[in-house]
Amino acid sequence: MNEEQDVTEKKEVDITKFDLRKEGKSNGPSLQLAEVLKDEHRSLNEKEKLKIIIEASKHYAKFLTALGVDYENDPNAFGTPVRVAKMFVEDLWKGRYNVLDPITSFPSDYQGMIVETNIPIFSQCAHHHQSITGVCHLAYLPGKSKFVIGLSKLNRIVEHYSRRGQIQEDLTMQIFAALCQAVPDNAGVAVVIDAKHSCVSCRGVKHQGAGMQTAKLAGAFMDEPSCKEEFYMHIQNAVNKNYQI
Image 1 (cartoon, one colour):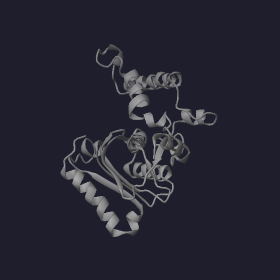
Image 2: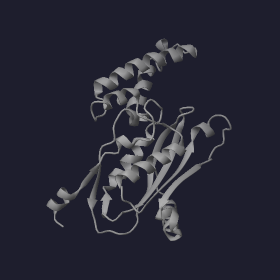
Image 3: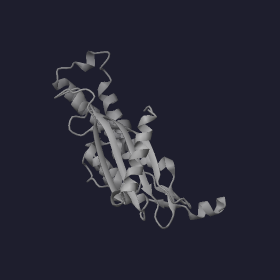
Image 4: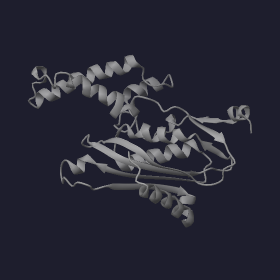
C-alpha cells in the first residue's frame, strides 16, 4: 500500500460528542465550552479563556482573604489568585476547556493485540482538588475493518480526560468509552489505571504509599481468558521494566 492510499483511506472519528459527563460537571466540559459547542466545534479561544481566568482569580482572591491570607501584602502570594486560575484553565483542568482533536486511524493488516502501557496520568480529585498521579494501560483488538489508531492518539485520549476534576472510576470509564468510539468495530477494549491519590496521603487517613487500581474490559478481554492473560502479562512486563513517569 502506497502513501497516497494511506492518506485516502485513513479515518477520523470525532469523539467529543460521546463525552459521558454532563457539561458543567468538574469531570465534563465547562459551561463556557458547552455554550460554544452549540454553534461551533472548537476549543475556547485565548480571549474566552482569559475571561474565565480573570473572573476565577477574583473569586480565589476572596477565598484567600476568607482564610486570613493578606496576599496583597505578601510578596510570595501577591500574584497567586491569577496564577491559580491560569493553572486550572491551562493545565490542571484544560480538558474542560478544549475539545479533543479527531482520532485518526489507518488501514493495517495487523491482527494481534495492540497495547500501550505506562501512559502518564496527571489528574485531580474532584472531591478535595488533590493530585491523582499514576499510569494508564490500554489495549484493543482491531475489528474486521482492520483499522488501527495513530499511537499518539491513545496518549491524547488519556491526557484529555485526565485533565479534569475526576474520580478514578469515572476516568477509567471515560477513557474506555472514547477508545471504543475511536475503534467502533473493535473486537475488544481494555483499560487499567494504577494511581496514587494525595487526598489519601496528605489528609484524612494520611496513608502514604496506598495505590488504587481500576479496570474496564470488554469483548475478547472479558470472553477469552487467554486474551485477558496476555494483556495483564504486558502490564506486568512494563512494571518489571520499571518505566519512570
